[in-house]
Amino acid sequence: MVRVPAILLLFFVASCCGSRELNSSERAKLTPGLLALLTEESAPDELFDVSERADGTKEYGIIIRSTNPDELRAQGIKVQSAIGDVITARVSKEQLRSLLSLPSVRSVDQGNKNQLDN
Image 1 (cartoon, rainbow, N blue to C red):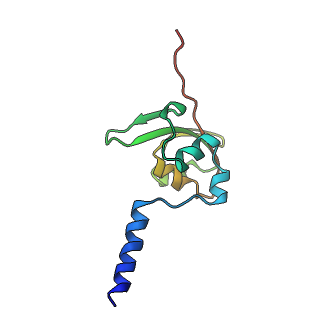
Image 2 (cartoon, one colour; image 1 turned 120 degrees about the horizontal axis):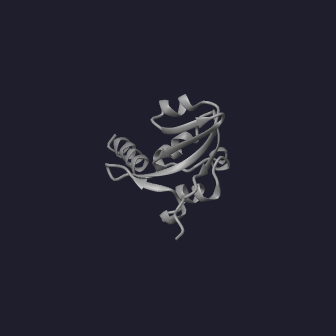
Image 3 (cartoon, rainbow, N blue to C red; image 1 turned 60 degrees about the vertical axis):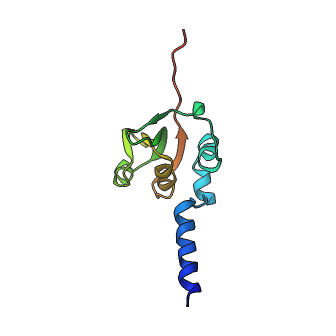
């Protein structure tokens, strides 16, 4: 009987520490840059429109193709604008991963990082 609780504890710790892998449907919704962000240990921030929240969490500017911005808001996604099926938002990696499973989300593109040229 001691083994069963130990095994359950091991599964619980593993699920908390690691993130699940993306399935093929979720991978197909992402552009190569965002796929690298979620699957590689160190995707450089220079490739993304990234900022830091007050709690220190990085958030990324993205463009979502979806017909339902309210579904995104219900998931805690900070929607910045919604025109037709084009939605801009700022999300953490965890939020990005979770929005991929929403039925209304067709694709997710990384936002452009704009900078002044002098």
